[in-house]
Image: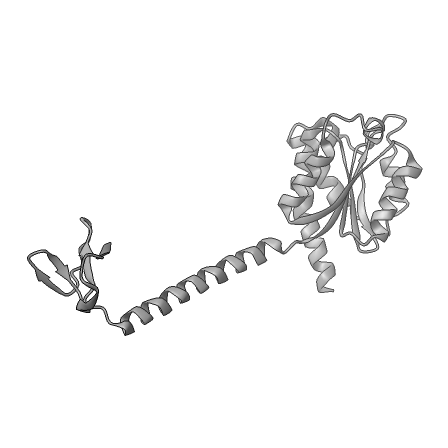
Length: 228
């Protein structure tokens, strides 16, 4: 790197270019006090143009990166089926976890809705999401064998086509991951119009493993629908 020596008289027409200790480039003629280089106005103008081009290229690359990041796979909605969550008493934060995993997978999460373990309330929440045109609805909870575990029943009536492959994949991967509630889940998956609906068990392990299984399959389904 070099610096400009401001001690040179202004009327001399010469800019003193004094190299730093680490400089290996010699500019102009040498004299007993250092290095002297003559820089024309044309050289300065060319340098300005080059700097502007570099800055424009940097801005363009940044805008392209932002554009790629802003491209989302589709819209999603989370339905948490839990009596405590419906009354604002849930401390497990399962809904935000699902939303975070969906966002990481490339989805825009419209909302997280909590409903009581009631078949009518669950069906209404799912149906509202479908009518709203979201691409993916993930419900969490209510897929076990207790009397109030009615999410599969509420979901089944909305589906035009079931996707047993997703159901089996979620159960199989859940068992392999040690999430017993995922392995024993009665959750269903299928299409309601152009919306993919998937039921997951509610433990954090089941959610993490289930989302890792579902999101790549959801991407493939959404892409196939878009191409069609």
